[in-house]
Length: 559
Image (cartoon, rainbow, N blue to C red):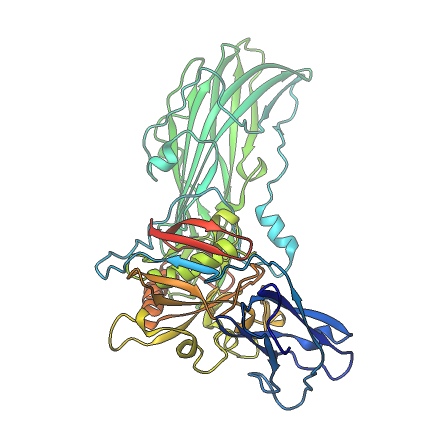
C-alpha cells in the first residue's frame, strides 16, 4: 500500500495459489503501529487458490507493510514458496490502542516457600492416561450400568443386593469410626475418591428379601472400601461394614468375604475370618461396625515392567428371615459389578525403581507453580489456560496435560525447537528489565510444556494434540517492568491474539522459567509419572480482569 488504512485497523489476507505453494512454514512479516509481527501459515494446506487471514492489526497512521521470506526454520531447499496478492480490509476489530495483553504481576518473593507436591488433594474425577483410541478413554471414564445381584430362589425366597443407593435412607446414622485414610474418607459422601496412592469409596447397599418375586423386607448397609498403596510389592484393602437398618423381618444377617480377585501377577492374601474387628453378624436394630484388612502381593522380580490391576472383592451373606422358614445363603455382592468408577485401577511398575511401586493410574496429580517466586512463568501459563481454546492443564476445564518423557517426537525432534524456532527470539522480543539479576538471561518459555503431548511442537504423526509449524503461530508475549514499577506481561509488538492459538511462547527471565520447573523432576519420581500419564497444572495465580474481544487486562495475585 502507498498510505495508511482509513480506520487505523485492518485484517490482512494473503492469496495462496494452486501451484508453487509447497512450504509448510511460510513466514510473513507485518509492520504494525507497535512493531513488526511474524505470522506463519502452512501454504501447502491452502494450495487451492485460497485467501488466508493473517489476522487483524492496528496500524494507526502507519502504512501497512507485509513481506514474505523464502527462508524458514525447517527448510531443506526442496519446497517452493508462493508469492501472490495481499488484501487489507479496514474495519473496527476491537484492537486496543496499546497492549492487547496486559497482565500486571505481583512482585517476586525469593523467600516464598515451595508448594507441597507430594500430598495431593483427594478427588472424584477419573482422568486416565492419554488413550491411543478414543474408545479406551471413554471406557475408563464411563460407569457400568447399575444392576442387582440376586442369589438363587429357595422355596420362592430370594435375596438381592444392590444396586447401591444414591443417598442415605432417612433417619439412618451416617458416621463411621475414624479408620485408615483420615477425614476425607471417613465422611459420609457416597462417592469414590482417590489420590495417587489412596482410594476410598463409601456405598449404601440394600439387601432385599423377596418372596415369590415381591420385596417383603429391606436391610441397608454402609460399605466402605479403602485401598492403600502402602508397600513396594504389596498394597492393602480395608473393608468396613456398618448396618444402617435391619428390620424385624430378619432374625439374623451374617456377612463374610467369599474371595478377592486380582489379575496375575497380582494375588490376594486372604485374611482368616478371625481377623474381623467386630463380628460381621447382626440382628434387628444392631448397628455395630465390622472391618477386615486384606493384603495383595504382586511380582516385582522383573525389571522395567508395568502391570495394571483391578482389585475386587466378593462378599457372601447368610440371611435368616424372622419367621424361621428358611436360611438363605448367597454370594451376595461383588464390588466391581455395582456402578464402579475406574479410580481403583492400580498400576504397579518396576520402571522407576527395581524394587517397584504402585499408583492409582486414573488419578491425575497436580503440579503447582511457586507463583510467589516465579510469577512470570506462572502468568504465561495462566494466560494460556484461561484464554486458549484448549486450556492446557486446567482442571476446571477438564483439560489435562499428558506427560511426554524427553519432549521429543518419534523422529527425535525437540518440541521446543518448533516453538522457540527463531534464533535469538527471546532477546529480540524481550526486555532486560524483567531479569532477576546480572547473571539472568532472557529465555523463550513455551507452554504447553515441551515434555507433553499437548505441546504445539509435537507433530500429529507422533501423537501431538495441538501441532503447529512455528512458534509464530502461538500466543506471543514478553515480560517487562512498566512505568508503575511492576512487571507486566504484554503481547509482543503489534500482535493481537485471536484466542484461537493453541500454544504460547513468552520472553521472560530465564531464572523465572527454570525455577518454576525446579520441583518437576521430584514430582515425576514421586508420582511415578510415566509416558501419557495425565496431570494438572496449578499456576498459583488468579486475576481480576477486564476483557475485550481481542484483549485482556488483569491484575494478578498469588493464591
